[in-house]
Image 1 (tube, rainbow, N blue to C red):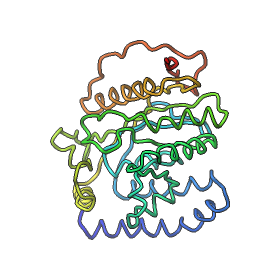
Image 2 (spheres, rainbow, N blue to C red):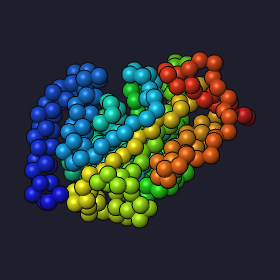
Image 3 (cartoon, one colour):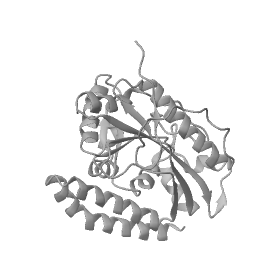
Length: 291
């Protein structure tokens, strides 16, 4: 893609933003949550269409209005428009992003929950806000690695922010919250499978600058991405937070391995099932935490 073509497509994207910004701002200020969530999803879809990012989705997502905390891996800045295009949702992001030009504004319009990682006590504040949003039926995406990876391997999932699910139960009166594993994997470019050496060209991790990563994205052409919704995990009163996070991590790891290698991983051990299904997929019941 030439710089001229990229510039024209960015202009079309900017015009779309201006067209949607006014109605979106009004919806936010009038408390119309359902309507406010639609504009960011439309904007993300326009971006993906303009820049030829194709998504394949498998698995069963949470039903609209169901309290769900999505536990996902994180590879690139491109994850945001990819996941944001699927349906209305919000993200949890580091507080520094709020001050970034353009991106910070877009994040706030997405109703992003910002966390200050330099303040340990801020996790409790964020968990309270997330629990409030879960009680309202919002879909919250948590990148549980706490940073981005290179697209070929998964970093350990952090458990602290999963406490929002417990807060939604203990403080919000919910019977249970759906923990939803989600895997994102970039699989092809120009229709050809990505090699291990090519994956870092899409990933944005470590000390990589954002500008060169975006420039490389514009230069290299169409991308295919696979999004996999794993089996939901029931988080109820007394659920062991660490065990629940470990199951979500294992589910995302299996999905990433299959997407990257093209081969299904070894069968996972049998998990005890809950009595009642969550939407269309059978849930996994986590044992209660021990003293």
